[in-house]
Length: 140
Image 1: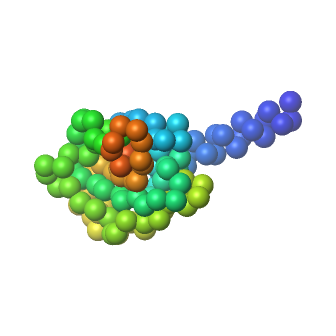
Image 2 (image 1 turned 90 degrees about the vertical axis):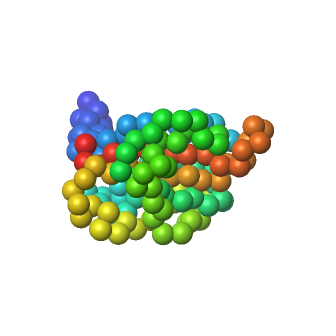
Image 3 (image 1 turned 30 degrees about the vertical axis):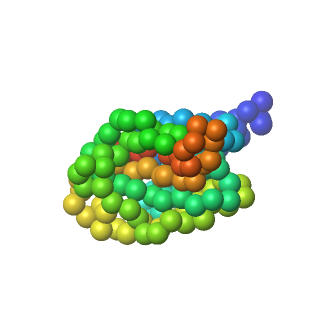
């Protein structure tokens, strides 16, 4: 009973720190998992990537509008035709399939809705060499 209460409190505190809204999902990579993104903290200082293909590179992108199209081994959820930007340079993905990048606070200066997504190296039998994470909208 006590362990259940601790687990419930821990899950509740994790749920309270979720920032942004996942509005689009992608497809599994060559590890069988769908890559997931999230803000590092409630102050929006950085963005995390988990469940990506290990030991490759990833690029965080963002834009002003959503999109919906197959793209490489994944699904492109940020509109490439209007207000489409990269955050810095590609970053290495760890052996655990994780990556992180700092976010310039100018991204949030206008107060407009912003859509984020990671693109990352993912070689599969389909012939494509990249995949995408799910996508996150801020503010909700």
